Amino acid sequence: METDMSKNKSLLTQNLSRRSVIKGGTVAALAASFPQIWIKKGWAQGNFRNNPGSSGEIKLGFNYPQTGPYADEGADEFRAYQLAVKHLNGEGDGGMLNTMKPSMLKGNGILGKKVVYATGDTQTNTDKARSSAKRLIEKDNVIMVTGGSSSGPAVAVQALCQEMGIIFMAGLTHSNDTTGKDKKRYGFRHFFNAYMSGQAIAPPLKAEMGTERRAYHLTADYTWGWTQEESIKNATEALGWQTVQTVKTPVGAGDFSQYITPVLNSGADVLILNHYGKDMVNSLTQAVQFGLRDRQANGKNFEIVVPLFSRLMAQGAGANMKGILGTTNWHWSLKNPGSQAFLKSFGQEYGFPPSQAAHTCYVQTLLYANACEMAGTFYPPAVIKQLEGFKFDGMGNGPTEYRAEDHQCFKDVLVVRGNMNPQSQFDLLEVVEVVPRSQVEYDASIFGGELGPYEV
Image: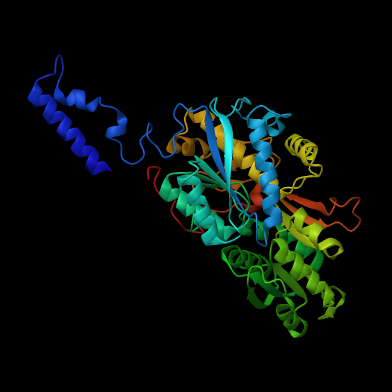
């Protein structure tokens, strides 16, 4: 594009010179003043991909798992996206538009344009997620893509969005790689990551289970599982725990009995389930059916740990979740104004409390909209620069920062336990500890990766 623009500029200058139409200035001065669109590298501010121009609408792309093992999470994400659109357009009670600080959101759309949306199904599959996002960008002309309940699809869609000049506001993705080795300039993550889970959960594990434990890991065989296993393994070994075995399991396996049976004779006294969604529900249920929670091993009560929890998973696992420790990004029981505003809005709309997946997707939508308002444009590089280093509060996680170096949000992390005495079908997790940001923060360089250019 730059070569063609240079040729166009050169031809323009030559023609002007030959026709001697320059008055009161020079050819160079006139050529230099020509619109930016003809001389800027990449997507110029007046000509970026899917620029809404004079249209009265702005279209967002919601790409989430409508099918597959993480579909329950996806359904709750879509509910949150619909609620965010409603609030941005000035409908309903406004939710977190009333608590977010600082904020330029007015409830009149984004930059005065009504928010509409198109949807795609990631199917909890990397290739399907990428092709779905590509359709949203090329066919539906969305200006931003958001969503996903799995890190494999998130990493793939983030890379696509970088290539196509479209901002990606990641949904539920917990792999260290998303804002580590696979981070991109056009990608942003509000959700916490596996490293943070490890750092947050290690002290409670030490306090409740001691320092002499032997752990067996069952791990979802993709980027999230790998980095979660690594993070929890490092954190527990730092306590003095030994790792007996690590076993990879396919996503969507359904029957995990062949992976659980070897645990019985392994010499382990802790099973760590690096699983999510229906996979976690199935593996935990089957582990309990095999009698692991009733066993004694090495003179200790056998324990199960689920490092990444959600209310939807707890609901699926039922009584099997009672007493089990894990971490979560957010929980509806938090009493801060932002959490309560979102709980009220979501509850009135759907009749039950939101999940952490719903929360992070709602917040991501508002953060993108607010960045556009701050930039005064939808031009992606300008919006990106508003998000980088943005510090905000009032959205449920306490003071939060979108770190400029890797586009990872840093905030408090919750350690939770399966509620022993739930008062309702939704009262399934109790917050054990609110872990401060300082305990889970790390240097941006430890996971590698390069953000890449602003102009693509």
